[in-house]
Image (tube, rainbow, N blue to C red; front, side):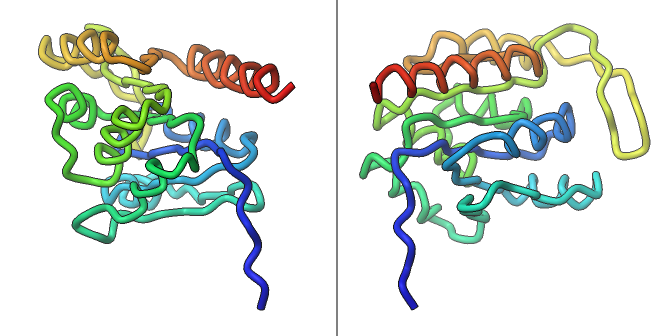
Length: 186
């Protein structure tokens, strides 16, 4: 059996345990070429709760949070990724990223992307004082705490990090990266 060589550099996409715009994020993922997906333990639960499938393009590799040291992060050291997307990102993930805590697959790939100067796009879910969000049984109103909003603001100051606050902004940031890739390969 001949092992097919993966195309690099590629997108990395980390899924966290947020249900906020989870389905829309999965739809965006279906359109991206050359991608690896990092599924945290919480994201695996959300996939099940929201009755979703990871219907991803051919050639997509999926890494699940099954090791204490998050073995797949080593790929960041070798130029495998040109962009990391963390979407949707829970307030827990954003807080850990701001505090420099990398204790799960999603926070670990964010930390390694930063250390390797790989640009990151983070869709921070808790970004307004009052929001409507989809729960497994329908729409609900949520009220992010001051600390959640402050952490989202803090993350905006990180090097090589673009924080987006809507699906439209996420899509625009991804489009900008795709355009950059096209122009840099010409």
